[in-house]
Length: 344
Image (cartoon, rainbow, N blue to C red; front, side, top):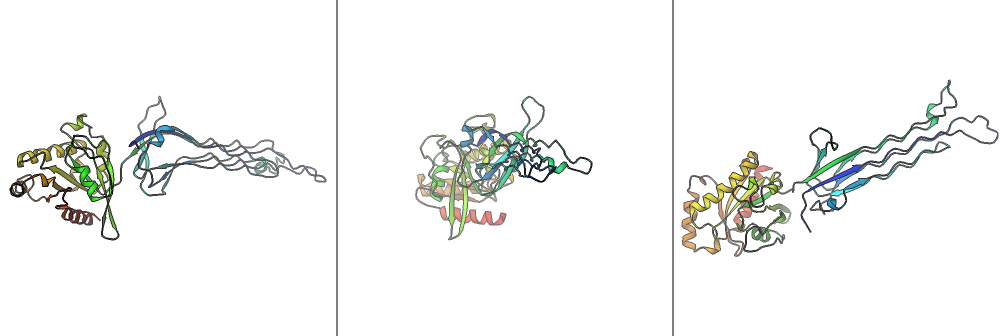
């Protein structure tokens, strides 16, 4: 399934039904008086959170969502039927932006977000039904020959933006081993291959910790130098780490075999985070040297000591792991649990 994290849709709520002009007509009851019923309510358009949805793809195929008009009132004080609401299922983490009418000035504004399964957000409210002539009878007007029309339903143009909900985000340059690591820590099965930009969209995985606790991990497509200018895949997918609590910087010792190269790779990713949002640099983070099974043990120990003692890494947590052999994965899991516990 294609991963779509933006969609534009138009929504139209239903108009309210019209009130009825009617008079009671029964044998032996002359001048029975008005008995026109009210119109029914028009249907709302509602966004509903759904854990089974992981993309906005469905909304690319259907752009217009329209609720039905309420039923008109009728005689004998009968109220018209209210219309059913139109409910649109969206993935958790969806932001809802209201766009200005086409051709009119104005800025988009955020109307809400869907973060919980089953959460509802009314984006277009149906019109109220009009009152029948029964409501307008008075001592001075006993035969009102008018009724209210139904109110118009709301309409809007929306931009839906998906920001995945994860507690941990794996970030790094292409070929850092992010997809392999998430497939080892969780049941996620992203594409894994020995060439850059294998991951073209974020992937989510759930890491089980003990019998009850679970940690949601996001694998973010690789960043490169000048990604903020559109190089590579750009920074479009960085929106998906805005809700994460902990960042894991992956640096491959298979790609960068000396200390200075590792530091440069780390600074490249950090620089792109800074250009995207300074707030991302305030997140709790771990530095992980990946694919350590590709390096001789003595050389790896020397590299670890040099890297950990560098001015850039002093005071930082640096963990060496190998998804292929399982080396260091337990330590990484323990550190992730400790980081997240400190954020709760």
